[in-house]
Image 1 (tube, rainbow, N blue to C red):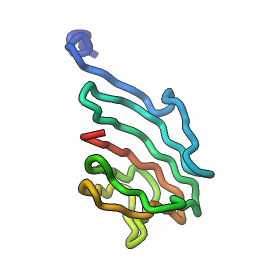
Image 2 (image 1 turned 45 degrees about the vertical axis):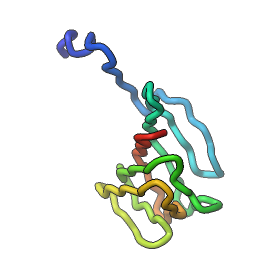
Image 3 (image 1 turned 30 degrees about the horizontal axis):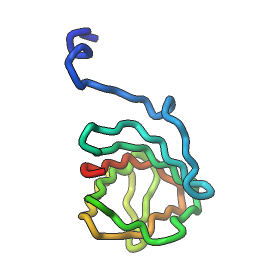
Amino acid sequence: MNPAILAQEGYESAHSADAPVHELFPGIRLRPLWTGKAGATAHVLEMDPGTSWPRDDVHEPGPEEVFVVSGTFNDGARDYPAGSFLHAPAGSWHVPQTTTGCTLFLFYPEG
């Protein structure tokens, strides 16, 4: 790899296997990857088969962007297989769940 790329100011990287694991609910784990200076955050969320968020997941103060890395994610209305992208605007909500288990990349541009 070109060391000049890594020497650029603000260039950062993370690996999900090295991120701390926070169990949010039984079978649902969050791995924080990055926090920007203005509050944006990036995470990996792992959901075991048959798990569900215990309440509505409201997107505040800003939007939530989700990329389904593996498995099938359900937002309470429909299934999204691996490779799907979802943009949930600020103030919207869903009930995250999965029958198969899934891994999601989450990005919160406004924190």
